[in-house]
Image (tube, rainbow, N blue to C red; front, top):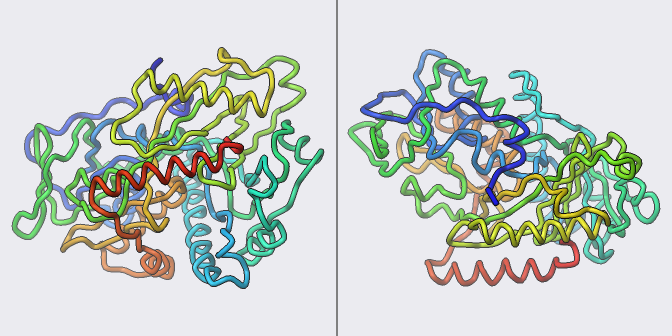
Amino acid sequence: MNNHCGWIALAGELPARPTLSGTQRADWLIIGGGITGLSAAHALAARFPQQRVVLLERQRIAQGASARNSGFVVAHELPAASERLGQPGHAAYQVASRIGIAAAQEVRQCIAALGIDCELFEDGYHFAAHRPEHLGDVDGILATLASVGASARYYEGAALEQRLGSGFYARAIHCAGGNALLQPGRYVKGLAENLPESVEVFEQSGVTDLRRSGQGWVARTGQGEVHAPQVLVCLGAFIARAGLHDSGAFPLELSASITRPLDEPRWQSLFGERQWGVLAPLPGGGTVRLLLGRRLLIRNTVEYRHRDLDNHALAERRRRHLSGLQKRFPGIVEADIAYSWTGHLSGTRSGEPYFARVDQGLHAVAGCNGSGVARGSLWGRLLVEMAAGDSSPVLADVLAQASPGYLPPSPFFDIGASLRMAWEVRRACAEA
């Protein structure tokens, strides 16, 4: 089995960019070629069109975690019990919602400005539960979502089964008014292939050393180095590769599968030409989408690991994907799965990002916590805004929330994180 991301395969790969060699000088250096780094590159080129921007990517731009997520544009998150109307955490939820709305709008603006064809679906998605108690206080959730501008509606029983084509879910809240779906491989590819000429990209150029040099910084790779007075680190879960070890961000490994087009009459009558998305109410539950062309996507594993999944381990996760699909859609068989792959989520203990001026001329961000399409797009622009010394209401909101939480040293955190994720998966096993 090859770890071939279905989103990238369906979007098509970009031509390879050169590897850094020798010495380069730039006005700005961006480390990381995912959504955040590419968004920052566009923001810099628009703001400083005469300045040179160099972007370094350890592997291939637009092919890392940014292209491997489930494609949810998150404006409104499901409020936790402590965040609902009248609860102590509601004020923080309001701030998070303002940020989420701004982030989702950032995605729409990028798509419109660059003419990106990424199958944007504006009709929202569902928070759906197999066990009714996992969705909790529906009235409280609906009222809370309405209070922050979301458009939410409750479904259950036959109405929900007709909507999703599956009797697996007992109840759901459909949430629109900002939430959307897209093809993440196409979105990040569009960001990459529309970069302005002032941005030069080097692939297969992982940074091995970043340190101050005079009034600026020098980043070294295996074959070259870049000198720049301003550096933006956009490495998400792998921010430590740039020597930033106190961000509070850590990687979680996820895996997903996409089926072939389900063209048989049974599936045509069940799904038609619709698309939809489902998020589980528990973090260890399954994410499911019906894509254009009657393909199904499922993501129902999440793990804290020191080593990436190998092919044997991915094959076992693929069996979990198949089981999850069969619970929802009896008749799906192993041969229906066309692509299976892994990816990483950038998490923090508090669920809030690391967003910081690390040093003079050095700024960094990490920790999208599962909302990387929207927040990653916004983080890139805001990082440029902060580095340029500007301010805005949304930047103020982000900085007010940017407390990722303390991580104990290894091995204590490693043990704790592994146990916590295993507990979350067990707790949500009915939703996987």
